Length: 218
Image 1: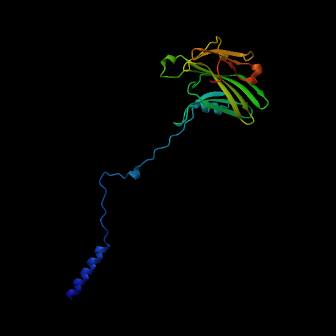
Image 2 (image 1 turned 30 degrees about the horizontal axis):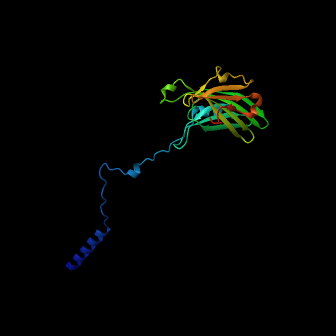
Image 3 (image 1 turned 60 degrees about the vertical axis):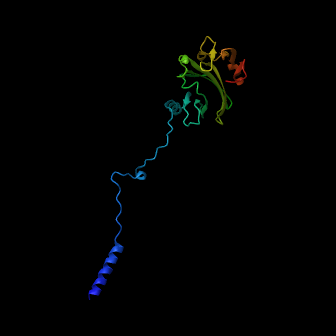
């Protein structure tokens, strides 16, 4: 009888030991699961310039600077032209004539499906590392031939005044005051030594810019 009792107790003890779960180790007080609390870094958001947004929203002529939104991109100068049927946004690399204060369409003529436009752009020189140009100006003209049916355009630009590029406008009358009837003739010094002349004839606007003294660069 005692033998059966001992065997029964041994079996009960053995079964209890097998079903008992191992005790889990508790986390140390104050420990944090890094995966649970990790917050992903948000991707950079491209924000449009208010001036650009306003020009596009109002469907009007305008000139604005588009900042580089990625490290590999460059700052651009953009011109928006409008017609009854289409809108052109023409952008090209320019980090000198940036955030222009004065812009104007000096000449515009439509011939068939193409519109020919001469745009005046001027900005105060913005170069903190060159205090000598604090009162300087960056002035350029852009001639655009725009096919309003295909919405494609070709253009030419000329810098006619620039503190940063050492271009001095020799004209006495402000270019922006040109009446648009007689030929526009601009004389300027490029590099401080080379005399240049740029001409635009509204009666022969298909010729675009006519220049002497340079090889056709900016």
